[in-house]
Image (cartoon, rainbow, N blue to C red; front, top):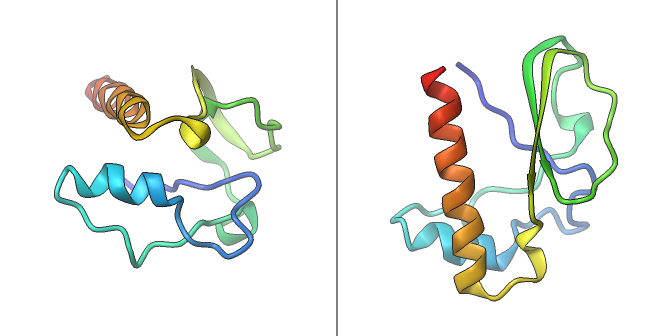
Length: 100
C-alpha cells in the first residue's frame, strides 16, 4: 500500500506546518525532514481511493476509483490542543478505513 498526503496549495517554503510537527512529535515521530507536496509531485495515475479532508479546499481532478470526503476541520489556525484533537480524529479515521 502506498499513501500520499498532498496539499492543494502547499506552503510556499514547502516546510510542514510547525503545529503539525509539534503535534506529531508528541507521538514520538519526527517529521522535520518532511516537506509539503503538491499535485505536481504525485503520479498522474488512477488511484484506488482519494480521501479529502474537507478543510474547504478546492476539489482537484484526480482520477480515482473512489472519492471519500471526511469533512475534517482545518487545524491550521487552531491551538495545539485542538490541533491534536483533529490529529487524533484523522488517525482514528485512517485506522478504521484500513480495516475495511
